Each structure stands twice: as structure tokens, then as C-alpha cells.
Image (cartoon, rainbow, N blue to C red):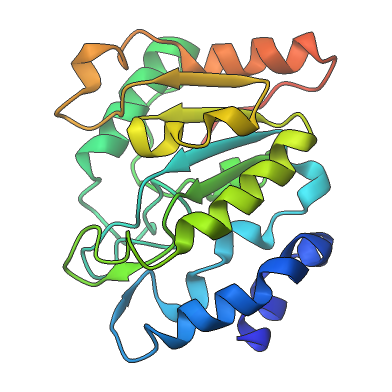
Length: 214
């Protein structure tokens, strides 16, 4: 576990992880015999971004269960995945409507990570082929702790849907709406201009807005 965290978590996160490392070790030992989504070495990929550079966090639910789709960044899929998940298609549709940025040809959101956006799932793993398989094993205690640290730093949170909004109390600056899934996107996600809202909140703090280009 120590190798996993040390090799995939930027050194700036080290003090944040100290109190939760024992819990992470216990949690991972309980799922070590399972086929995971994302792959074991991608679980903490979101934390490769320097903590001091993070200005926004977008919170997802749990990883895509389809083998090969999850990559450790919420909502993101590897460039090799040709069929973009519908929730991500809806995000791209709103991105185009809000920012005038044409929908990309892949679902890879890595560029956002490099622009100061933490793409954090509420639950960091699931079993391949099964949604919400790990929703009750304790990941929320980890992501609660992460959210509390981000809130102290006045990071702007994007909270789409009920699971993400469980973290709302940690943040002063936040953008909330229904989830972009096909089941709910037409009930308040489309037209909500979340990307503009994030940048307005950052500008109100005299911080640099996010370049949402992909």
C-alpha cells in the first residue's frame, strides 16, 4: 500500500494522507483479491496533481465498472475507449453550451487535471462489471477527509447529484445541480453553466479561472 500511495500521490499530499493511511491500508487489503475498476495502480491517480495547484474539485460517484473504462479520474475514460459514457457526453454537451468548447473525440479529462481540477470520485473503486460494489466499504471516510482539506483551501467544489452533495458542508464555494446522467440531466443539469459558475467563484476570490479546453 505504501508503494501504491507514494508512487501515485504527489508529495504535496503527504501530510493530508498521514492520518488516513492506516484506513487506506485496511480498506485495500479487503479488496486485494478482486478485479478492480480502475486498475490497482490507478486508484489514486487523481492525487498526482500538486495539491497547491488545485482550484476546483469535480466530485463523481464511483468508477465506471466496464473493464478498461475507469482510469482513476472521475468521469474520465482513457483515449482508447471509443464509446464515451452517456453522463460524460452530457457533460461535454453542457461544456459546449456553456463555454463554446466543441465536444472532444475521446473522454480523457487529463488536461483538466493539469489545469488545477481534481477529478475525485466519492468511492474510489468498484468491482469490474458491478456498479456501487464498494459503496459500503469505507471510501467515504477517505473522501470526507480529502474534502475537508480542500474546503480549508477554498477550493471550488462541483457537486453533481446526491452522493457528491454529501460533501457540500465542507465547502464555502460550490456549484451544485442534479447529476449529468441520462436519468436526471434534463432536470437541471443542462443549462446550469457549471463551468462559468466555477470561474466566477474563482474570480471572486481573485484567483485564476480554469481553462476548460480539452
